[in-house]
Length: 120
Image 1 (cartoon, rainbow, N blue to C red):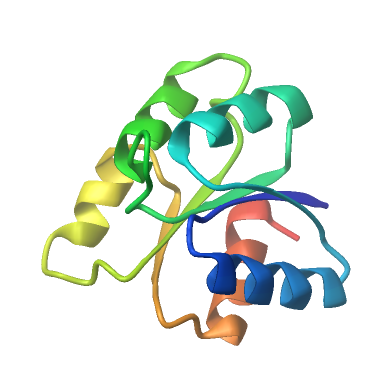
Image 2 (tube, rainbow, N blue to C red):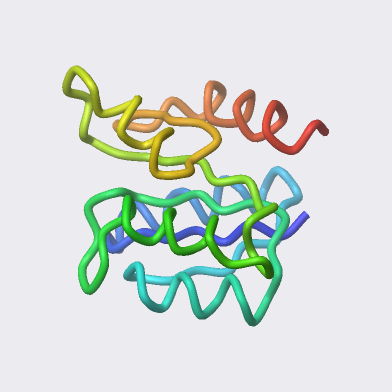
């Protein structure tokens, strides 16, 4: 399975990429919302894991655009964010994200959410 990881923090990107690849996933990455949308269209990943606080275009806006595009609307999106304030989960789901998880990353919980949204 190919996962598009949209994350602007290099340490988080590196850590998650290595851990996901050890679990057998193929990972492509983008550092901002705009390039994330481009890579989703170019690569047709089976899943997108996306930070919500991104440069160029935040994750909420990127999720809305991905879900509005017929080419990418069926790709599940997991929002992964340090935003854990009341209402943030609902805001992410309303923007089109299929699931929501918080940082710091609990990798086992993230894997469960990956299996849930991809039905694997």
